Length: 346
Image (tube, rainbow, N blue to C red; front, top):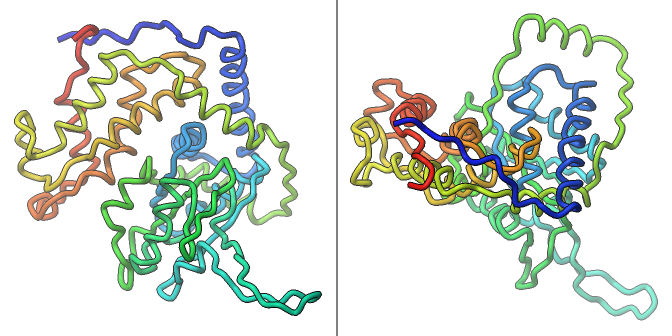
């Protein structure tokens, strides 16, 4: 079957939308240029981080120590001039250490005591949850409401988080002793699992040379927080053809071993497949990616480009996969080879 790409039409017909789309593309290029003052390589990681921002999601970044996970997110916050908080997750971290808590304060004038809410580090624009798997599930769960609803509840009272708001969590794939696996419900709330790997030899030499010399980096603020909120609303207006939407749904459905048309390798290696959030995030991420590349429609290539970061933390493998050293990335490769894009109009 020959796949027909989505029609290059646009629903962004209003002049304000088209102007905003042009600003998004230019803003993306400026942000990347500013990041390049400090960050070497990692083009795919930077693109996924920016898609996370423009789509309004949260992402999990996985990589061994020393690959600039924290530096990347902190630098991104500096370039965007957004309020940044880093929370070091440890076994003794409590939920109130994240959300904040009520404390008793005395009025210096009247002498009366009253409960006053003291906000925690979650009240920022970009929150870095460093080594999120090193704290117990109760504390991990403190992030759930913030990530999903952009608000926190303390002592029965709800506090809204200022927009834009993002959570980037990091996880170390080695030294797993003393760690706590993230619950599936929390993993599903991350838009992407971004894998950050070692640089090339030449890039590593460039990093060593730069980081062992005097560094004085001044960043120009490419776009504002208000711009990001506007870009997020614009991304949701980008049209998606039925064929592209069906392709995203078919990829997710084919990953479920209980599905009638699940491939044999899924039934052999997978315990649970992707939830309905997977195609939602592929489509939403595809919209942001299209705008970043100067297009006003989502293509099959956008879905294919985002399949790995969207699906890799949503597919739960079984004993057979582990014994055969089959990774989720290998399974997603086979899914992309097996599930073909439908024809337009199907």
